[in-house]
Structures are given as C-alpha cells and as structure tokens.
Image (tube, rainbow, N blue to C red; front, side):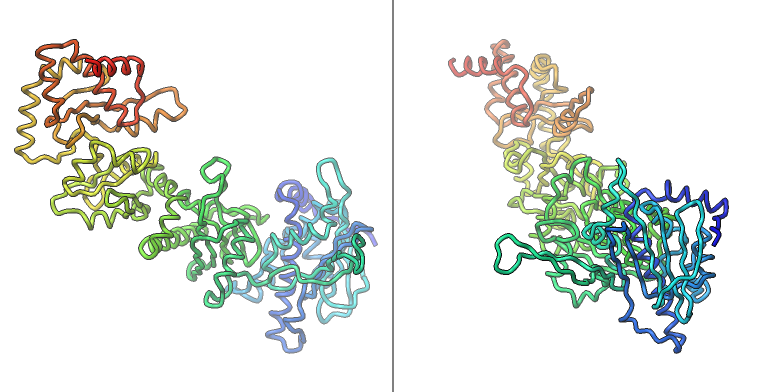
Length: 626
C-alpha cells in the first residue's frame, strides 16, 4: 500500500510541534493517556444514551506495557476506538481533534470533560519515538485498522487483526543519544513516575504489569521475581472527595507525599467554587519556612490541573508574592490552555481563580489569628516577614489587603496583638499608635524613649524585623491613628504647660547647646527633653529616616550610605543637666569631654557604632579618676 503524505501545512506543523511546541519530552505519555481517557469517555457517554451499547464503567481501563527487547512502549485502552475514516481524519490531519468534534456535536454547552481539544497531543510521541503504530477497532465494527508513521515522511493505513474494540498505540522508542537517554522510557519505574506525576487523577484505572523482587525463602542473598498487574494511578484526587469524609491523617499524608515536608501543615484549606469559573483547590499553610524560602532560588506556585491532568508543576500566577508560602493544587475545567498544554494563557478565568484563592487564604489566616493564637504565632514567626514585605512592596499597592494580618509583640507583657486589637485597647487620650525598633524585645524594652510612653499607660508595638518600620511608614496610619516612632523628636506626650516650660528651658540654655553641637558635627541639635524618666540621654530623629532605618539601609550592599538626622536629647530632670550647666560656666574643656561621652552613650544605647572607642575609653577612665 502506498504511503500517504501529510499535507505541506501539516508537515510544517509537525516539525514545529516536535521541535518547538513541547519543551518537555516527558509529557508525551500524559498526552497519550489523556487521549485514551477521552476515548473511554466518548464510549461511556454514548452508552448512556444508546442502550444497544453494552459496556460497564467498571470495565474501562488503560493498560501500559513495555517490550524492552523490541524497544516498544504500548498504551492500550478499551474506549470507542476509531474507524478507518476516523484514523484518516484524526491522525492524517494534524491539529484536527476528534475529541473536540465529538464534544461540539454531542455537548454544545461543553458539559463533557474532554481533555484533548487541539488534535496535536498525539504527535508529541514523535519526540521519543522513531515509529508509531496505532491499531484501532471502533466499537460495533468488525474491521480493525492500523495507522503507521515514522514522522514527517507520511503514514499508511491498512487492515489489521484486533479482536477487542479500542485502541492500541505502539511506540518504537528512539535509540539513546549523547544528550538524551531514551532508555528511560522503557523503564518500569520511570513510566510509573510519569503516570503518577501527570496522570495520577485520570478517572479510569491505568494498569501496568509490575515486577516485584524479593528474597527467596530459605536463602540469605538469592532473589526471585514475579510480576503482578497493578493500578498505578489514584483516580480520585483528594480534593474531589467530600471534606466530611477526609481524615486529618489523609490530608497530612497527601501534603507530605506531594510536597516532601517532614512536618504536618499548620492549616488545610479545602475549597471549591462554581459560577463564571469553576475550580477545586486543596491548599496548605506550612508549619515552617523551607530552608530556601527567603532566597532567590525559592519558586512559588500551585500545582495546576485541568480535569485531573497536571498542566503546570508550579503556576506562580495563582499566588501573590506575599502568599508565596502556600502549597497546594488547583483543578479547573475552565482554563484556556495553549496548544501544548504546557503554558497557561493569561485569561480572565485564571485571574478569577487567583483572586478567589487570595481572598480565601486571607480569610483563613484571619480566622487562625482570632481563634488559635498559638498557631498564628507559629505562622507569624515563619512567614510574618513576607506579609510585612507585601505591605511595603510596590509602593504599598497591597497594604489595604494585608494590614489586618499584621501582628506585633507589644509592651503589654510582650504579648502579640493585631492592629485592630491595639486600637481597641487604646486609652481615650491616646492620639497615636506608638512603636519602637530594636534587635530584640529585651533591647527595645531597655530603650530610654520607651520608659515615658509606658509611664503614660500607652502600649508600644515592638518592631524587631528589619522591614517593620518600612511597612508601618508605608501604612502611615490605621483607623485614623498615625504610627509614631517613640524616638521621633515630635513625640508630643507633654501637656501645654510642660511644653511651654521646656521651650523656655531650652531657650535659656541655647548657648550651652550651641557649644555642645559645635563639638558634635553629626547631630542636628542638642536640647533638653521631658521624654526621659531615669535615663540621662537619648537620640531622637527628625525627618523620614529613623536610626533603625539607617542601620537597615546601610547594611545593604550599596555604595551610597544614608544618615538619620539625629538630635541629642538630655534629661532635663537628671543631675547630668545641672553638671553640664556648671561645666559651661567653669570648665568648657571638660564640657567637651562630657559631650563626647554622652553622645557615645546615646549611640551605644541605639546600637550604633562608636567611631573612636579608644578615645572614649580614655575619656571615661580620666573622668573616673578625677
């Protein structure tokens, strides 16, 4: 029989498809199994409306076998099969989909879950095969036919012997090359792995003859093998089962097996949606951050399925960066796939799914915060930085979405509070939300500026993360209450009378402070303050950059350094104030030394470096010996 030629356009498409469309050779098996599933779907659907078709759903199966000697990989199904004309039309014309034609003819509303709609997936097998043989017998027909092709050169169709209806595809696997080990596609374990990865949730059993090796009875090192036919796929994914019938152990086992985590997840979110776009999802909030989470190597994304077939291992478009810690799967029949099903086209359905998932994650996290603070604290320790960075990132574009998730330790027994709880507990006369920054909670607790605010009975948010203050400055306020750093020079805790008295005191001593400032070129101003209770001195800042921000920004690998505008504040009620007045009148040289010591002390309290520690040590020893 003369070999038939593909049309010129089909040749070009086949060449493009084999060499360009599919970037991952492994997916050929996914495509062939999906086609087999479609063939079974068609026959099952026809049996529901045509009583002359005597088939039972439990009898349907896909069988895969390997003939290593002849380098053949065989995929068989007992679906509807194809007539000679269908072989000609569906396989002889590239990009003509029999599945799509069936769907359009029998189901105008597209309610049938047919996977293959482009008519190109079959040809992906040429990436690993030097020859493909398709033996098929349509249900109810007496004759069977064979379609044979070695690729672009053409194909032939001829009668063949086949007793049972359905289709058998025989792939003659290519010989190994320097770049590709094609023997992998003749390995039982490799094929099982590909089935598990891409086609685990095909709704029909995928069977293989699996070889088992075990120790021969009565021996110590002799083994014997036997083969058994086993179902490789799970068929019904966990996310499609009723939530009420799934145990916590099943959820945890799925998570551990799927995402290779040794700890159980902190939270499981099992949800589904119907409407403009339908989907099911099974999401997990891990109990700890992966070792590479805060590195560039970390890849976010959810596993994306279409009708139980894996489309993308990590679909990053389904998660915003601030929820990148979430693991899970999404399955939807309403996705617009590209021709190879490898890359998702950006369409409104994908965006709707992503929006729905984002809202669900936020809702579940808020519930966790309110109902199980111990778990939320564990979540916050691992992923709180990511939430705060999400507020600061992109000029605060997402701050309103995330602000209610913020959680801070506070001066109230160092307990954690949400901003909503903080505002609810504020005193009536409190005008602002106060915060303090430092390396640890204990170090913040010892800051001189904290003492007076606590004395007023106001709670303070304790910020120990480098991104904290950037996030709070991005928010600016919460429920009309401004965020104020306790180290800011305009803290405004004094009464009007106290302000007037302090203003007069500073005016009376302006010559003293001018003298001290001349000695300290780095500060904007030296002055008395009422903000301190027992401590003698502190640093305040003016402008947008705080001392903590200066430290964070200067730790970054950039050439240009920043400096906060610092003010040296001296406790007006401390005995050091009287000492400075006396030195200004009697010993200005000594005043210079005291000024340096006080400024160094203030810098050390803030965790700032001392430029000349040797000089400072000498000055302190000199004053102690007087």
